[in-house]
Amino acid sequence: MKRSKGKFSKRTRLLRKRARKGALPMRRLLSSFGVGDKVCINLAPSQEGLPHPRYRGRHGVIVGMRGKSYVIDVKSGNSYKRLIVPGMHLKR
Image (cartoon, rainbow, N blue to C red; front, side):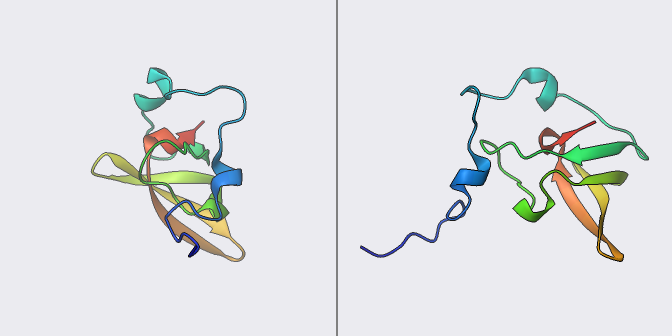
């Protein structure tokens, strides 16, 4: 059988929920951040709009908004990467 090349292939071990199953808490879905807040990228696997898993656990600074998502500067090596991430994948 041909190997799957779906969007979660090679990621299922990294993105699985360990402690408990179910939907995200409402406080995480409704959380809001301001420009200049420091946030940590914490992936919610059941939701769309995931940033690349390489940025999992990285810290960044919010520099703006784009629609309902946040624009974040994350340091990667000597440069800064600009990510567009929905609020459900962020925590303070």
